[in-house]
Length: 93
Image (cartoon, rainbow, N blue to C red; front, side, top):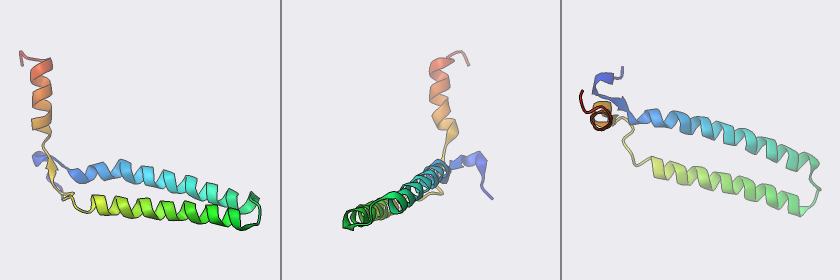
């Protein structure tokens, strides 16, 4: 179980990232389907599809390499973040 009194884990930031990746994959599959189904049947369409897939794989690999170096269970101390905001906006508290 996650101890929220110490803060929330940094892995919470992966939830919006994962939703973005799912949305991206939906649009990629939609675009690839239409390229394959409605595109001309020559080498140019196949080259575009290959470049599209290769670019997606390259971005996914670079994202994995960039994100794998972090400890995602490191807590974000919310009291430290919000104490500076409250002291500036509500100085009497």
